[in-house]
Length: 592
Image 1 (tube, rainbow, N blue to C red):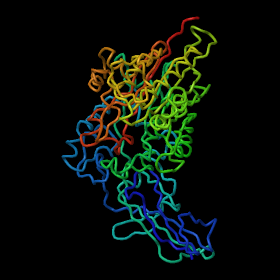
Image 2 (cartoon, rainbow, N blue to C red):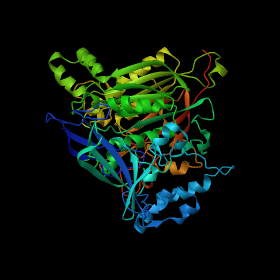
Image 3 (cartoon, rainbow, N blue to C red):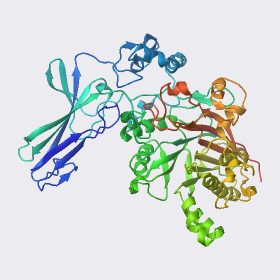
Image 4 (cartoon, helix red, strand yellow):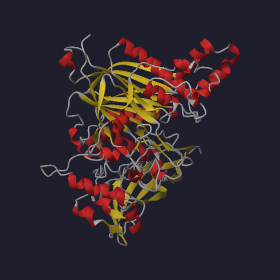
C-alpha cells in the first residue's frame, strides 16, 4: 500500500506571497521510494494523497516586528500611525530595535509627509508601491487576496482553525500574518474516499509579511527629483527618453548558507528570493532590463513567463559549460528583457569568450603551450548583445523616416581575482565586437553588466578611458603575452559611466546625498556589491556620450539603507549586488 515516509518544509518560516511546497517522501506498494505527487485523478494501486492547509488563528492578535519579522512586536511607532504609513511597518520588537532602525525608519516618515499629491492621493515610488493594481501581481503583495475561500474547520482552546487550501502547495496571504499554518497529508482510498493510516502534519512558525525596503527614487542629474516622471504604466513622460536597468540577481546555485551565513535561511531560499527579486524588477518599470546570473531553468520557468505578463520580450545567453553541480539546468547566464510597446527586436549577437579564446590560441600561442593557454582563458563567460529599434522618440524631427536603433550589451566578466589578464582580455574582446557594430550603423551603445572589476582597474580604465596606461600594475601579469603591446588595449567608442554623472553635475535636490555615496577619486559609486567579505563597485552602465545623455539615475544605497547590522543579500534585498538604473535621452542626430 502507498505509505507516507516523511513530510517536511524547506523552511519553517512562511512569508506572505512566497509559495510553500512541502517535501513528501512516499513508499510505493513495490517498496520503492518516490516524491511524485499521487493525486486523485491518477491514483496508485487504488490510493492517492489528500492535502489540507489550515490557518490556526488565536483569539489574541499578534503583531510582527517590521525589522526582525521572525520576532513578535512589543512596541508601535505612533508617528507611523499618524502619517498613515502601512501598519505593518510601524511595529518593533524592542526599544533597541526601534533605535537602531531609526535612520532607516525616519525616511518612511519623511516620504509619507511628501507623498500626498494635490488630489490627496499617494504618489507612487519607483519601487515598492502600486503593484497591487495589476492582477498578475496579486501574489507578490502583502495584500494579496486568498485564492481559496476560508472556512472554519474547528475551534479549540481559544484557537480557530480555518481551512485555507487543498493543494500540495500554498501561498500565504496577508490574512495569515501572525498566525501558524498547519499542513496535513494523508493516504486516501480511491474508492471509499476514506483516509487510510496515519495523518501526517507539519506546523509552521508564524507567517510574516514580506520585508520591503524603502523605495529607491529616480534622481535627476540636473538636480530635480523626477519621481513623478513615471506614469502608472511606467512610461517616461518624455517620449524620447528610456530607462535601462542592470542587475546581478545572485544565482541560486551560488546563494549557499556557507557563503552567506549572515542571511536568514528563509530569506536565502529561492522561493522567497525569486518573488522578492521579481517584485523589485517589476517595480523599477525599466524599458530595458539586463540581468546577470540567471539560471537556465529559472529563466525558462520563472523570469521569462512572469516578465512576459508585464509586457517584456526576453532574450537569453547561458554560459558555455555546466557549473560544478553537473546539472544542465544550473548553468547561469545573461538575460535581456525589453518592453514590447517601447522597442522592437532587430538583431542578436552572442559572444562566447571560450570560442574567442580558441581562436586566439590557435593564432598566437605556440602549439606546445595551447593547452595551458586554454586552461587559463576558458572560463565560460558570455555576453549578449541586442540591437533594438525604438517605437518612440524624436528621431523623426531631425531625420524624418530614419529608424532610431539602440545597441545593448549585457555581460558578466570572469570573477577570479588572480586572472586579471583574463578580465582585461574579455572586456577588450567585447569592446572590439561592439566597435564592429558601431562601424556598420549609426547607433547609440549601452554596455551593462557585472564586470567584476573595481574602479581604477585595467578593465574599468579600458571601458571608461578607451585605453589602459602601459604602466598599469595589472598589465604586469600576462603569462600568455595576450596583452602586449599595451598600446593595442584601446577602443574608439565614446563610453562614459552613467553613474559618474552624479559626480560631474552641479548640486541640487537629492544630489548632495548621492555625492556622499560616490567615490570622489573614481567618480563611481562606493559600492554595488556588499557582503561581509567585500564591499565595492563591480557593476556599471556605460553609454556612448556622443549619442545619448543621462537624464536621471536610480539613487544609490548606503549603510543606513542597508541597516547597521546587515550585508547583502538580506530579507529586504535578495541579491548581494544592487540594481543600477539610468534614464537616457537620444541626442538629435546630424544629417550625413
